[in-house]
Amino acid sequence: MTSAAGQKKKRAGSNTSLTFNNRMFVFLIPALAFFLIFWIYPVLQLFYYSFTNFNGINYNYEFVGFKNYAKILSNGTVFNSIGNTMVYAVVTVALSNIIGLSMAIALNTKIRAKGFFRTAAFFPTLFSAIVVGFIWSYVYMPTNGMIANLITLIGGDGSGFNPLGNFRIALFAIAFVEVWKGFGTTMIIYLAGLQTVDEAVLEAGRIDGCNEWQLTKLVKLPMIASTITINVILSVINGLKAFDYSFIMTNGGPGKSTKTLMYQIYEIAFTDQKMGRASAFSVVAFAFIILITILMLIFMNKREVEV
Image (cartoon, rainbow, N blue to C red; front, top):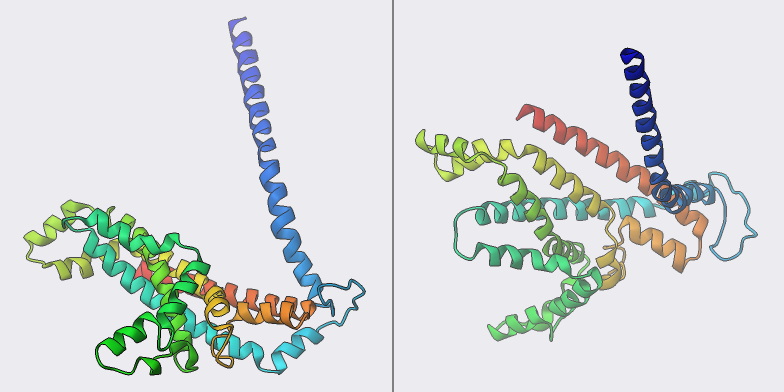
């Protein structure tokens, strides 16, 4: 009798647990619906419109097959924007990680007022891209801009300083703005990784005669390899989807020197009103970003294993 009662009680408890688990799935429905409506559906719609001549206004569009893809691949626009995007991404990834890691290492030591310096380094991240873009537009302004005034103050020709008007360096100028705004986030992630390094391991290295540079190179960096991977991948994704500063500071110019993939898509969609072609461009950009991200992830994971 006792055994039968125990088995019955066990089954009842199991049914209660199963019912509770089923109820938990109910709470996923709002998030799942949000994901389907605002992510999956727009992506599917993007692929659909990429095979049409939809202009974004008139729904009397026609199916044109792969003509949109052929058009963007034949006129060289996509290759120019990919080139600009790759240069932008390489500069921002390299500088944001080098500066962020250097700041994290410096601010992870026992120095005075390191809380203030950490806050100051992270502070630009709190501003919106629009605010940062307008601030740096003034900084870069020829003649009356901040840097131009400093050049004039030391006896130079401030009127000749115009990085945003020079097609050779305009892309690098806006890339530096991206780095200035974003390196604080990179620094915080590196700080979190460095604080997981066991102090006993570092102390053992010091006893063995290692200086701080050797400890950083041989101990700290290998132990935060996964943190480096995270920061690099995030920086790559952020660099490949660059749009804000091209739009705010240079409007894609001078010429086509700062037209990135995202800016080119915006221009085709809203300036030229060729939403179908912009959708095809978006599909190409999406595939390109996914490919680069996967290759970088494979490379960085391989580096982690080697380390």
